[in-house]
Amino acid sequence: MSSSRYELFQKALADARLEKGLTQSEVATRLRKPQSYVSKYESGERRLDVIEFLEVCEAMSVSPNSILKKTQPAS
Image 1 (spheres, rainbow, N blue to C red):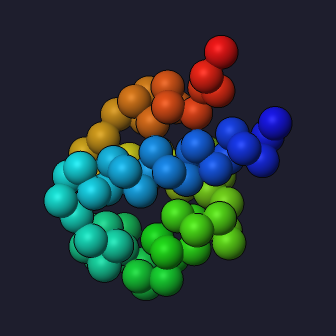
Image 2: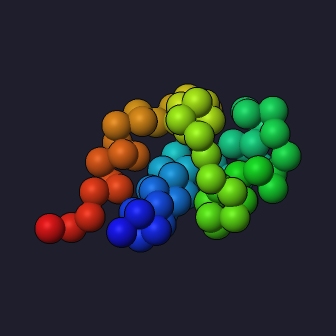
């Protein structure tokens, strides 16, 4: 279950970025990280810790709750 839930998390982050009209490079610049940082957490190659997640949300001007709500498996 945690694996599929993390996939929902990855998708929610990528979808939020796209909905804001941001590229991976733009988010990375806001985070002062290389573009590969964004690519890796969106693809699942790298996991985010809680603080990193909050920083990503701030960089995209997205509510952390809006992302977390999308990680709930459909019941």
